[in-house]
Image 1 (cartoon, one colour):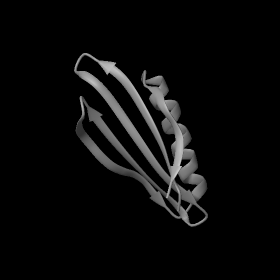
Image 2: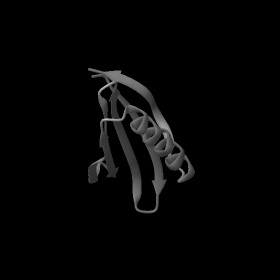
Image 3: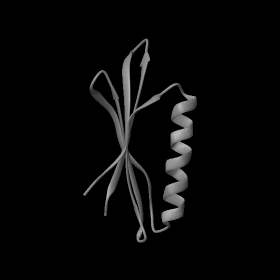
Image 4: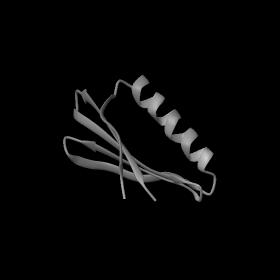
Length: 83
């Protein structure tokens, strides 16, 4: 199952923040992992979406992208795929 990765960054008074979203979505379902770092230190690592409905996983990924942009994050790494 290929994994698509998006990396977002923003500067805050507390330091540089990076959010990495790794989404594995195929006909069997979806699993999405999100890692939030501040100045290179992981402050959260979670799987906020998991399920058998790939459409729901894709909706989550699209909404997440819009939310991050609204929060001032910039997409710094375009979606890429890895195995």
